[in-house]
Length: 319
Image (cartoon, rainbow, N blue to C red; front, side):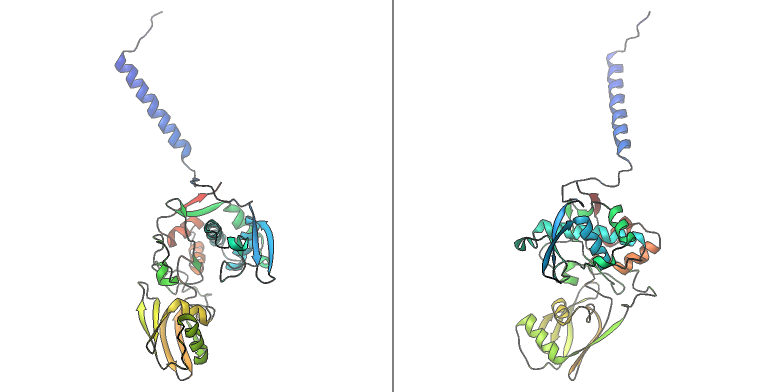
C-alpha cells in the first residue's frame, strides 16, 4: 500500500484550513443569539422587598410579580403586545439600575409603589397580556457599554422627545449619551388625549410653589416669561418677575398631572391666575409610551421600539 505523505507546506496549509473551519463553525453556532450576558444582575425569580406607600407596608415578592404590577400601572393592558414588552424591558432595567445604585437601601427595601420615587404600580390591572409581556422578555435589560441605562419613559412627547436628560429632567449627575431627540409618532394618535392641553393655577398656589423651589417668598408675581429652552424646545427656566425658576422643579411643585409637560406654547400671568398652554405629557426623556403603541401597531418589535428611542444601546439577558 502506498502511503501518501504531505510535505511541510501542505501540513501548514491543512492546519490553517482546519483552524479557519473551526472558527467558522464557532461563528455560525453563535448566530441567532439575540442576547449576550455581560454581567450578572438579579433575575426575574429574585425575591425583592417592595414598599407599598398606600398602606405603609413592605411586601416581599419576586421581581417578575413586581414587574407585572409596574407594566399594568404604567401602560394600558389592552395595548399591542410589543408595546407592553418594551415597557416590561424598560421597567426591569429601571428597577435593577435603581437597586444597583441602592436608591432605597437605607430603608431596607428594593422598590416602591410611590411614583415620586419609583414607578407606577397597579396589581389590580394585571391580565394575561401583561404576564405574557413580562414572561416573554424574561431577564431582558437595556445596557449602554455594558452598564444598565437609566431607562426613563413617559406618556407623550408632544411631537418630539427631549434631547438630553438635563433638558427634560434637569438631570446632570452623570452623562447619559444614549438619550436622543426623535420624532414622537404617538402624539397624533386619535385616542391620545395629551396632544394639546391647557391649565390654570391660582397665583397664591404659584407663589407657594416658587417659594418651595427657590426659597424666595413674595405675595404676588406680575409677569412670567421663558428664558431658557433646550434643543427640543422644552422650557428649562422660567422667570417670574426677576426670579429664575427651574421649569421641571416648578412643574412638579404645581403638579405634573395638571402641568403636563414643559413643552410650553404659551404662559402668562392673568391677574390672579397663571395660564399655561402646552403639548405632551411627562418629562419627555427616553421612550414615549404613546409612541411605543404606534410603533407596535406599525409592526415594530419591542427591541426595535426601544432602539428607536435610545441611541447605541443593547438588549441583553441577566443571569
